Amino acid sequence: MRARSKARELALQMLYQLDMVKIDPEQALEAATEGGPLPQEVRDFALQLTRGAAEKKEEIDEHLKSASMHWSIERMAIIDKNILRMAVYELKYISDIPYKVTINEAVELAKKFGGENSPAFVNGILDKVNREVDAQC
Image 1 (cartoon, one colour):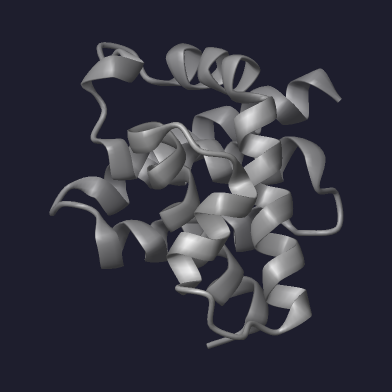
Image 2 (cartoon, rainbow, N blue to C red):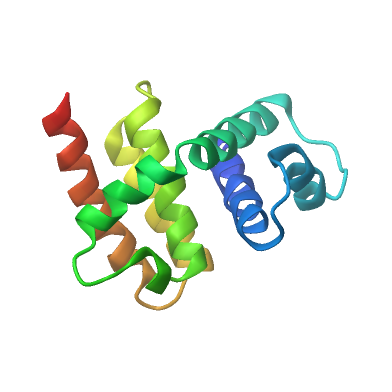
């Protein structure tokens, strides 16, 4: 698995923990990796995604609300919601990653960790958010 893909998977686990037990990103990283060694690149990118998505949560959730007609944030599955938050953070704040890569990686996470309809849901929401972000630039 590529380093950034591994970091995204790790960041998803960390964001899930942040939602469930209200710990900080460093504690979530320690718990997700069980203290095992991690390549620095994976660690750094996972922390960047987790911190960024957590710090910009309110702004990101506004994008999600706007893009997800008939679905409130509260109704979204926690895994889908955190995949979306992480991906929206990437789309808005990490300019060196092509949007297609971000969306594809998010859809792959949804396939692996989400429900049956998660990949299509994540893809549709991120496509709408990406168009919003592009329009704002």
